[in-house]
Image 1 (cartoon, helix red, strand yellow):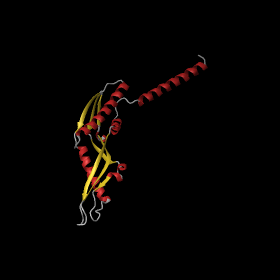
Image 2: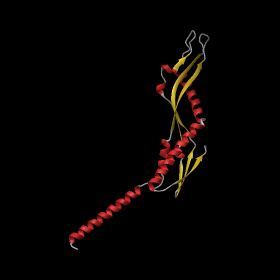
Image 3: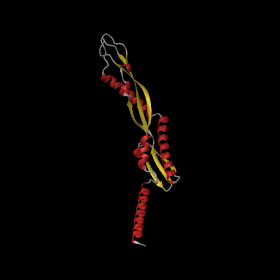
Image 4: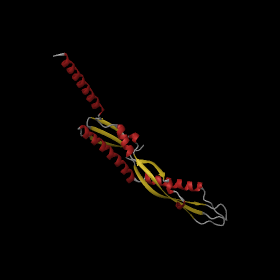
Length: 197
């Protein structure tokens, strides 16, 4: 072999070795099994939003005989977010067997749509001789009480909570199954439901 062929062969060997090393590097980036970080991200996306209409009712007692007790109510809308606490999600992998522990769904937060609070949302009964003014503090107290009652109502609605937990479970299961299809593995999932503290 002449020098030109030896150099060409050497270049080809170096290029092949480099390309094989490149392939090996790419191979290591492929996710081969479910990742708890991805599962927790999925749980974050699995939040169920429930929109509600609420009425805050209250009565302001008269301060003296020239005033009348005054009733008022405020209509507004809001949203309750239900889901599972993603920090409590656990996963154990043993070959093709995966045990996923998820907590019960809970009310994550509840908020008022501020745009629904306008002049049309406030109604009040008639005044007496002197005005029995409804203050901003009176309105805030009434809304806070209505929100507490709405929060309790949502927390006691087992159908909504089960729906939120089912949604999280289905999204996690879909993620694991798709990952399995991508790497040619059929994972078997065991679900464990964590009881509330």
